[in-house]
Image (cartoon, rainbow, N blue to C red; front, top):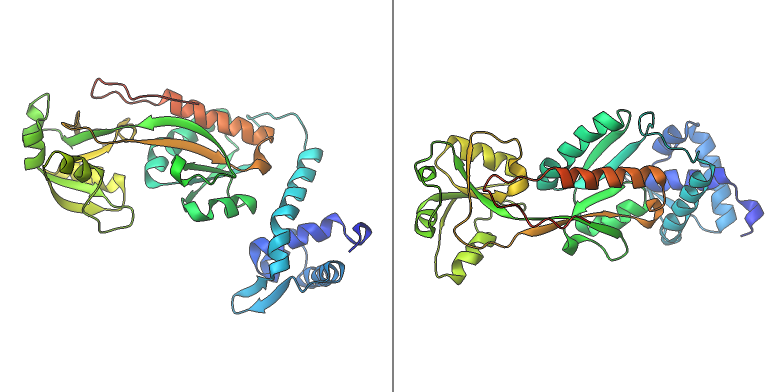
Amino acid sequence: MQLRNLDLNLLKAFDALMDERSVTRAAERLAVTQPAVSATLTRLRDALGDPLFVRSQRGITPTARAMELSAPIKRILFDIEAVIRPTDFDPATAELTVKVSATDYALRAVVVPFVARLRQLAPRVRVAVLPAHGPELLEQMERGELDLALITPQMSPPDLHSRTLFDERYVCVLREGHPAAADAALTLDAFCALDHGIVSLQGGGFVGATDAALATLGRQRRVCVSVPSFGMLLDMVRSTELVALVPERLLLGADGLAVRAPPLAVPGFTKVLAWHARTHADPRQRWLREQLVQTCVSHITVQTGQPPDERGG
């Protein structure tokens, strides 16, 4: 293969085919006809000496050689775009889409206020939220399918850049008017005697970090409800006699709930922002990352009168 046999359109077509895994969708993305994409694929195969893609039941499947070329070619295209992109960046007029991976917790605690901030500062920026899938993060970012990930340090692949946003802690919530909410402090005996609800991200689990902490004290609790999201759990607490331990930042702006400090120590967690090297120097992405960080700094809940251990980066 010689450099003169390749041009930018060939690389763009390869990138589209890798992302879409379909000649039809790649043609739509490139705004050209399907025969044009097929002809381009023939040129790519001749230039690279490999079939690159083979037909499958769901479209086309990349060969091993195509998989090797995918990330380098995407980086090349990104670098070229960065070179020709205007250096001036005006958030008020910028038009782009930022793709963020977030858990149910991060969506409510971080993305919601982040979007509210962007609506004020950069109204033409669109935000696409994707589910958080740790093992796939690096690959998604390499393919340009994802820009930012809101995860824990344990989920962050070592090849990604990351920045600590904050340390989260758990607080105890009951509905306003709950008999146990009459006391300013919740004792361990009262806590264990109540019916509890928890979030099980995998679904169906009735044991969590609180149970492990109770076990070290030789105590147990009754977990009666297991749900897949914190929003659902908070709704249930508002309308039942259930009690729950939830991350404190979820309670900003929440009503109908009484908040108490837990009667035992339950380990919290750290939330970090992660991104790929391909977007590290992009002025638009750098601005977006800074806005997300500032969002986390300004949205801190203190309902129990004890501020969280803030370690914003």
